[in-house]
Length: 123
Image 1: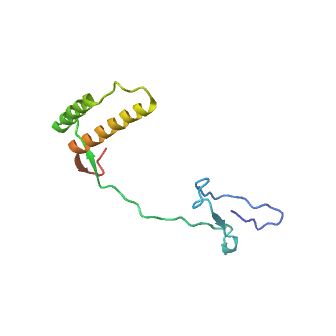
Image 2: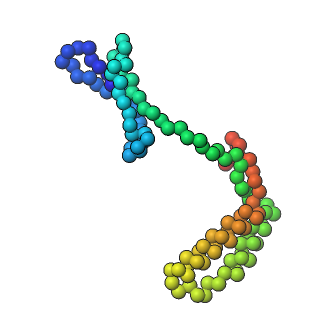
Image 3: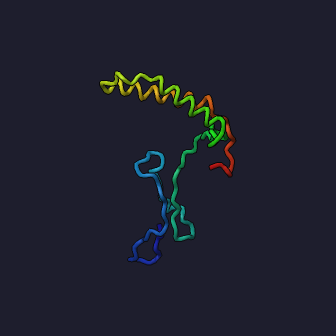
């Protein structure tokens, strides 16, 4: 906020602060006109909460064209062939098959993937 020294002139906003709309933590700010000192700008103040963040240093990958990828595909196909899909006659039956398919893919991925370190060159 800029405070005009000239009587009759209105104060004008020249500084911006971008906050997250609707966020209780980031939507509370203060304009501090008492902290202007000899400047014609009032400081803007906000408390930003900082919390611990887990930064992943590795991930599971299957390299395209690798033996792990071939084994992954083979395992997926053989497990999908074991699914009984003849009795899907309602939403619950469909949900059950979809959940089984998700479990098959998750377990097969974990079995065949290898851990790779994340670096600045990772995709």
